[in-house]
Picture (cartoon, rainbow, N blue to C red):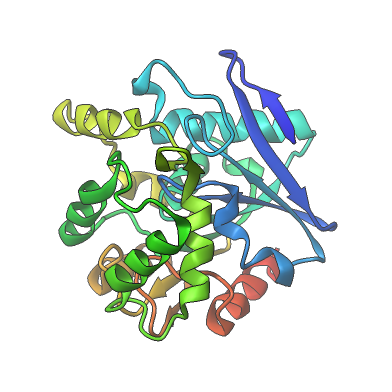
Length: 275
């Protein structure tokens, strides 16, 4: 297990796989390094670096829930790069990770060689926000991984048709841990409090300003064809504001693609090769 310590004293977990040009993998809002388990086996020729944000996975929780925000998490990512002695990396960001990538483009563009945004843009559809707030910070009802897998398969069937139960069993393990009392989330329940407080305070930045900072950086977007987070209109506007943007739509996927789909892998390769 590998950790580094941030300037404010938090111990954050990260892991590395493969060798070659470095790629920083930034997970979804409630996710962790396991978010990239399906992609990493296809990327042995790159140095794949994934981190657990503060309050997620194996990283230390923060008693100040206000620190669960995109800007702080972007700062933590830069501190990880400094810890590893990496001046410049490509970034693959899923959902929340893509928002962090945009924040990095605005604050440290010189550190980014290229960026892949996985089913995320500067605007999150309202239906997606409602779905996210419907589960963030709520304790699992399922008692075992098998129960959670069946629940996930049922809940996600419309957006992920045909995905086998085995994949949902893996996702259930990534997102939860078994205890004597049943399943527990692999993140701080205070994350929900942070989201609600930031929304009430109007502390959510204009992500279009951050996205436009990607204009001179090779950027690709992967969109799930059934996504309720990244809308087609938002993607069209992203293309208008970033003329060099490359995007692909993955069939039979909602939010967010697993990244081992042929369409996802091809776009990722093309963006990394463009560096």
